[in-house]
Length: 271
Length: 271
Image 1: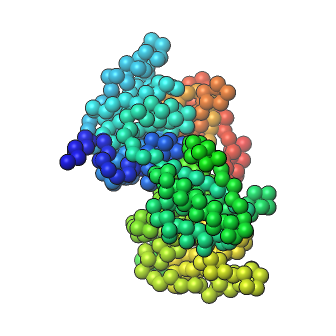
Image 2: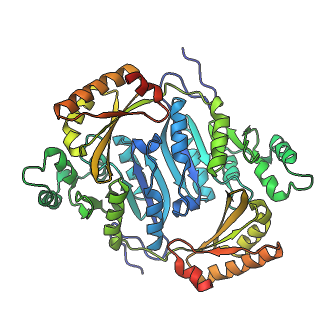
Image 3: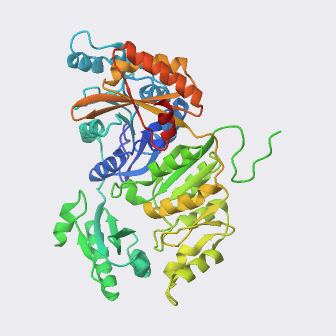
């Protein structure tokens, strides 16, 4: 019998999943371009955790609480970015506490970190807001600007500023229990999507456990397509890649296999 | 009595809302950086439509159908990007048809557009996939690469490639019924957030109808904060801006008011 997973630990034997909540009016209004999604998506994948859904939501208490409570039971891990600074519009800690029904406290450990960071007398009330966490939360270290993120069960609360978020993500990575990383291989062809689509559908049908995506591009007037194979199993990837090569050859074109980001060894093994 | 809104038309007398579904594994994996959210958020705001939520979801039929059916009743407008190309992983049209319980057909008007575009004999089965829409859908013109998007009730289905999405968005804009645009004013101060947070909270308390956001930055070692005021009412914005100036002056700093993107007249009026 498989052991029951502790709260916040994924169950064994299936894909480990995650959801990201990007909290902030400035993203929805288009004022700020999000840069955290791609970083977290790639970082999670390297750990064998699949980012299954992202929601961008406004700085509105009821929306944050409802959304958290909708997703935290559906995914193994939930990450949030944004809303943990010192100003009135930073309400994420309050909302996480309410979503879990926990009191919001000034976390003694977080307070000690801020006391050590600021010169005597400069830990103002405003700055002390950044030490507030739900009771019992564990902290996520912030080597960039000190004010920590925190974790409650399977929910990880991080800052929105990319440099700070990245530092926090690297601090918390070790605590995630992942599955097999999804590996990918990408081949570039100088053909529009519609020329390869029939052959590609056939390769997909004969390799159902490999996820095959087709992404058209147009660079300097050259129309082309990147075909991406994704699987946790190296052997399945290799078989699908061979089938793809054969299919492209039958169309009279040769694909160029590319290095996959965060997945250099796969394409090196192919060379 | 206010007239009942037709299907797909927002009700009168309140904020007009929208939700965006970004469909694509390549966004979730971090392989591709989304560039459509900010464009759509800004574009909608200029029309007086507020983007209230964005979801990024994978190319999985059940997820797309469930998500569409969750959000299309909750928001005045729903926009989707991605998944309407000619390959097997382009399943958005199928999913929209299933969400609405409509048959998926080869749209005669879309077929005519593609027939006019491709040389005789080159409208292959694969390319014809791009003419499929739910029965009764109206088309969204695509001046860039011809294959159209489409609309069913309040759901607008667009391509994922930014240049094509932008062209489609500009084609459909005229059919949206918006409210009052949210106007914004932004002031930049060379002070960390925590120095302004008490004063800012007081300005927020005395101007509850203006949404005030605080966004820290660090450029070339200079720590600073952008304070953003948002309201549909010019008079409320002006009053909050004056209160903000007075608050900053009391701290001994002068803020620099910036041009807001898509909102030049507001900051010109101030100068």
